[in-house]
Structure formats: C-alpha cells, structure tokens
Image 1 (cartoon, rainbow, N blue to C red):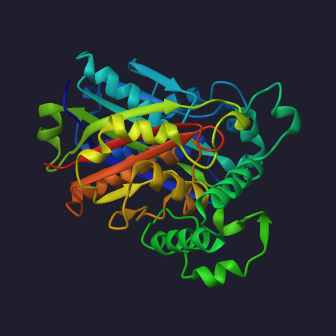
Image 2 (image 1 turned 180 degrees about the vertical axis):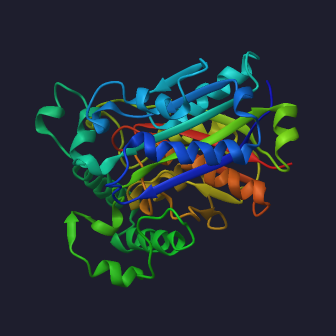
Image 3 (image 1 turned 90 degrees about the horizontal axis):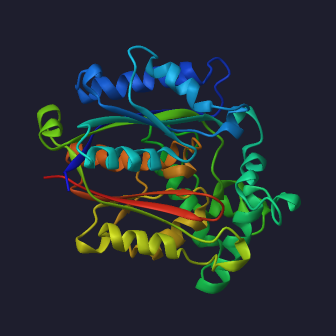
Length: 350
C-alpha cells in the first residue's frame, strides 16, 4: 500500500449565498486548496467531486463543478453522487493503483435553494418510504427517541452536545451557527421534532470544501507535516428504517474497527453528526472516551454543506495534525437517512 496524506484543506460556508452560483462558490475554494498544497496545478493527476443533482435542481450537477476546475486542458476526472468524503476514497484508490500521485477532491451544494430536509427524503426507499415523505428531522427524531430510550440518556445530553457545538463554532470562521448558549438555555427552546429542538439540528448551509491528497515523497516534498491516512473504510446498512437498530450504528463500528481506530490513542475526532443524538451514537460506535476532543470545529451542527460536510471532517482533522495541535485523529462521514452509510478515516502525523 502507498502512503497517502492530506496536504491541504479549504472550505467555505454561509447560511444563504444569494449572490453566487455553485461555480462562483467553488472557484475560490479550489484555488485556496491548490495554492495551499503548493503542487503545480498541472501536476495534480486526478480530480474527484461529490454533489447532488436534487439539490442542484437539475441533472449533472458535477458538470458545474468541472466548470470551476477548468475544462481545458483535459483532466482525469470522476464524480460520486454522495458526500465528497467518498470522492476522497475513490481518489485514494486511484493513487493506490500507482497511475497518479496526487488528487484534488471537492464537494459543494446550495442547500438554501429549496427545502433540504424534504429534498433528502428522495434518498429513502421509493416504494414504501417516499410515499409517506418523512423529512430528515422526522426520521432523525425517530432515531433520537429510540436512542434515548435504549441508552438511558435524556434531552439534557442532547442539549450538552448542541451547546458545545455552538461554543466550538465560535473559533470556526465558516460556522453558520455559533454562540454562548448553555444547555439550560437550549432546553428552554420548544421541542420541534420530539425529542429534538432546532438547536439539535444542522443549520442549512451553502458552500464548498476541497482537499488535496498526495502519495509518499510528493506529500513530503510539498507539505512540512502531512496528515497521513493510516486507515480508511466505509460500510452500509439496510435501506429500510424498520429493519435495523436505529439506536446504534453497526456500520460505523465495523468501519472504525477496519480503519484501526482502536489501535492507538485518539487526540481529536470530527464526526459528521447532523443531529445532536448522532454524535452520541457515533462516539459509542467508535469507542471514543471523554478525553477525546470531539468536533472542535463545531461539526455539522455549526455548518453543514450537504455533500461537503463529511469531507470537511477529514479536512478539519488533517489541518490540526498539520498544525501540530494533534498527532492522531479520527474523521467520520455519513450518507443516507439515520446514519445508513458511514466512512471512517484515521489520520496521523509523523
């Protein structure tokens, strides 16, 4: 296996970008990531992106992304209709083949163009679930209630997660939601999707995320402290909500075990938890103790650019390792309703 590292990370997020289209949002983020990597643009061997046609409002959303990359000269390019964390996985595979030594990976969306909670219902089973049209919060509330009843936790545990996310978001320049509200303050808010409050749910966000990854000596040549990908794995669970245990995440547990989460201490973890109870389920699945700094960026409760938020979790961990504030970290991304598909990436410094 070739050693592969994240060598640069860039992101942007706002609640609603009324002035720019997707291409105009992506271009400065790609430029920042490429300039941060230092690798000449023409030497980056592969480009892979993640986006969603339903959010774009038309077919071939990735073509808009290619416009941002540049249509000439021809490039080796691919796309996933998933969070761009899975695009990074494809890029990591491409580097493992030995055909390329570096890759640019990015994801983007404008969730504010429509009702993202209803649009994402289209991820569910088209015959038995979509006709009922449960929104993301509807399904998340079912999972949250199942988790609270099985774990013995209560709504204060959810409020503690939400309050910490807002506090951590204050240090994140891309946070859409941040503040000093305490758990007591948040518990005074009305319950909107029992047992969830608005503070337990992700804020709609527009933006983009990009990372550059590189192999072996290429990474060492261009980055003082690369964040090496020591393990990466993803697993999927059943589509139907009624045929799996919503109170736990077996696919996260098995992905974490395969990626090697438990083979060393963890300094920092960025978990793609779009609802507060999901962070608790993911912590349990990955076996993260109280000494792990979880979601220091505020996570998806601070900013959640659909199809880019998972890649941001990898970028946030990598940036802390490259900066020297952490040596080993875990990044997680999810896709599908109620944590259906999960990817776990273990990163380390040298």
